[in-house]
Length: 300
Image (cartoon, rainbow, N blue to C red):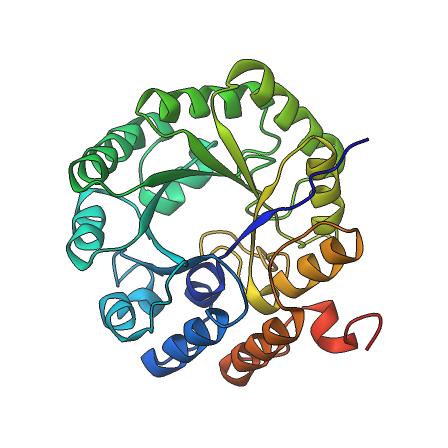
């Protein structure tokens, strides 16, 4: 099978990783991490999220973080936004790109934003309107695409349905989140094949968690199906504040280590990435789950 010769990696640790920390992370530490990630060769960094500070306390200083980071030429620094208010703040501060999110399951969506999935489409439409009027690129995220901790298995047809709703709003790049690590290679294959068949106009990004140890296996399955765009989190930080046990995004350094050994170019310097992971470990409570951070590269 022909695998992609290169992939794009969007680093989500500064947002997805830090938002899940129970301890407060200082603005200075967030800035230090983002600046370290900017030195690795990564070209896509999800830096902040403009959400309710009551809901996600560790994102309360996103405006200050955005203003303090050193923005490097050639790097797209993006912000996650839930609604028009968040999108307007993102547009005001001048983010390079926005992401708007929704779940595939009502159970998770209700706990996340207190609305059903269909009710949340109105918020997505308002974000799309703000992004369009501000000429800021917009991508979508669909959580619980491979299973929901509240509703159980999610049919691929449901993921396709929500994808259609987003696509009809002009959102043509969508990330599919394995929010609590329920995805397996079989389920990843079923979802990707359904999306390719029914919504071929949509560019796919995969956002896998390693909660149950299937993260990189899921990446390999997606690669075999031609996906070349992935999310990852430095050190394997993160999870979901709305689902118990939702630990462990795939670690960016683990992903880069595997891909480069497969001959798939990432454009990322693994040594610099490990330095950034050490920055994250310096302020994250408890050991990070990254394998390569613990063991080192295979040829070190």
